[in-house]
Image (cartoon, rainbow, N blue to C red; front, top):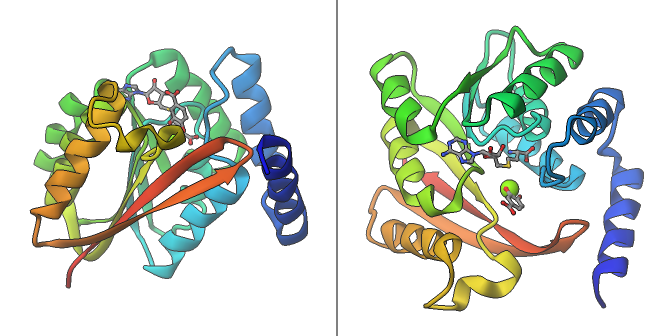
Length: 221
Ligand code: SAH
Ligand code: DHB
Ligand code: MG
């Protein structure tokens, strides 16, 4: 029960339940063509992000780590009329590819990609004020997970959600002496454990992207 079967099962559900279309396929193909790494969320994971955003009626979404905008498209499509998404990306080339992919998907008026380091852009975003966030997807440099989570929490409404990608890393998360990414996840778990404002859980996932997992935190009402 390993990778080929995980990939086949992902394919089965993505085909039977629907998790692909022209704009999403275009985003992946254009990202690959532009030399971006193939590390976007899987189609069924993107769809889960979309369903979660819709289930809490998210109107204001933040993403940290845009890459080619694949997860951004899934999230932006969850927004109602007047909804807004801001996605932060440190690599100007990734940001440029993402902006084009969002335009191709008809979402350039809804989703804005800001270029810069998350840790520099987040305080600026917070200082802008405006309505609170409903949902944040943290999917950038893993050592900074806890910092991103902290900023997201400051800006999120009660009942809002914060989702963090890649918290399992092939199981490496249980290694107390793991690499900087593992330490980033473990620091996040420690932060959440002593944070009374959120309830959280994490799920291990297998699939086309291998063995990894997602953390989902809900800001208490
Ligand atoms: N969310 C995307 C995948 C993101 S991959 C999707 O699922 O489609 C991680 C991205 O985070 C990369 O594009 C990388 O350039 C970006 N990144 C890395 N360090 C960052 C930082 N310090 N600030 C903002 N973005 C960063
Ligand atoms: C990597 C980053 C991701 O966000 C991901 O989903 C998978 C892999 C990486 O940096 O290797
Ligand atoms: Mg990821």
